[in-house]
Image 1: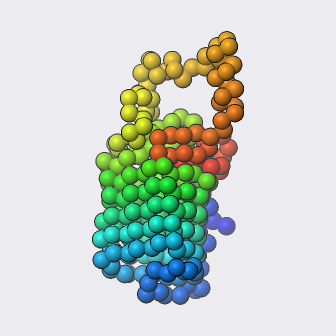
Image 2 (image 1 turned 60 degrees about the vertical axis):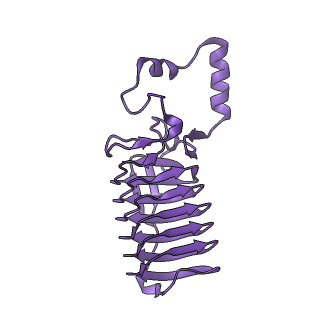
Amino acid sequence: MSTRTVGRTTVTLPEIDPAYLAPVDSLVSSDTVRDFMADGHDLRALDLVDGHLQSGRISRLSTRGWTMEGTTVSNVEILDCDTASLAWTGAKTRQTVFRNCALMGARISEVAFDDSLFEDCRLTYATFDRVRALGPVAFVRCQPQEATLPPHHPHTGVRGEDRPPAHPHPAAAGRGVRGSHRTAAARRLHRRPRGAVGRRFLARRLADRRLSLGGLTGPASGRAPGGRGFRVT
């Protein structure tokens, strides 16, 4: 089993053996597309609805529009693809890698990620909204200029020091807690209250083991190495 470690987050990578993959002319199917290889397709549009892509590789795909609605993606490599507009909603992805893909203007919402890696991808103007971490997720050397990304939080393993500036998620506007540039007021808010207020505060923190960070929710990856959560480097 191959893994990729980013900080304290360990992502399990797809297990793909090209010898067992069969070339396909189309990924559109109401059934499961399994053990497939789609290479070099140049499409005007690709619409996948309520499908399942399992154990395969998509490479050098070029399309003006890519829609995935209710589509499950598991044990798949997506490599060197160029799409002008990816609309991905209501889906699940597990053990999946996006590598060296141009995903400008991507709209990714209500997607549950598990063991997923984005590496060397262009995410210009991309929007992540109401996405969840069911397992480890990592963004490595991606370019998120003008993208709407989840806000920085010191307990999630998400950090932005190594990436170009991006727009924070609207839910994070005005918080002033990004990176090391916290204001004095923000630092005071992050201190644990004392007395009865502090006990109620601690009880709520212990009762609620999940974090909600703008459009991205999931337990904090910082609590256990290799656990669920998001990491950006």
